[in-house]
Length: 107
Length: 120
Image: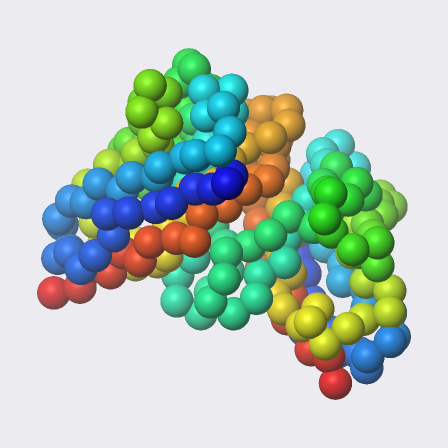
């Protein structure tokens, strides 16, 4: 199996840009997906296939990929964006991995 | 309304069994793969199991292989997880999640979860 590594925490002030990274050796070969989870709630998909945004997700959420690292960027962070964020990937053998999660704090 | 609703969680002793259910509505259940994902208290997400739309392909995480069995009934729009030989480390909120994309892919719809507590 393989691992996805995320920073435990990221802090930004309202209106600033938050960047959350996810690193893994398999990422150049596999898509990454991002989920937002607020306390007491189920996760919500915010980015799929590295950089695609599902309908209903605000435009301030974007994703990018470079080599073994994918990045979730939240531009113009709002208080409501405070949450845990998880990256995820899956391969053709049925291996599914989540990153450890990053707690985004809006100061 | 498009939704997934889990049920069947509760308190069970170590070594015991439990069967979780997930009722789907608002979409064509038989067209989608389905998954179980769990989250231990205060911890991150852990994928548990995958089943393809026709039940022809099934995958398990190593941590549950041989103890858990995933199944589905497309006529009843329902997903199941039979959990046997439960351990304390299986304590978690169990989410039902709709799959999309190639192979297991990603999870575009989640239920609210059901709590399983394994304790004596």
